[in-house]
Image: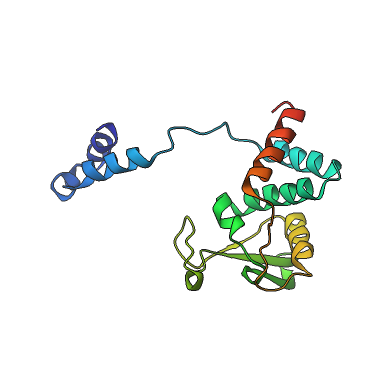
Length: 169
């Protein structure tokens, strides 16, 4: 109701062109998660990743890398859990705006029947050099069909919670 009224207030010429808008808005409300936790600033997230690495546990280390890549790529957990080695492309390009390398991730690979938040075959270039290098090293010895992140989702969530609690977040 209020959203539709706001749209029509700003664009009154759309009055007769939006017959299904109210139904569409009700549908979106039905699938809305209803809320989310507070956003974390980059420094807090990176502190959590550093804490996880400091534990010395391989699953905590993988959780830290997952956390960093998720932040840099601005993607859903689902997208990273279905990411395979063949979906990670590393380009060594010292002339690319002063960066040593560019790492691109391909999400929602259509030939495997996957979807990402942006649809299918969605590519994202990581922005942070340190995260790009760490991910590139992480996948270096993998076969193309190997999953990049092999920890169970529940284990990742447990490590996230432990790091947040340890840092008082």
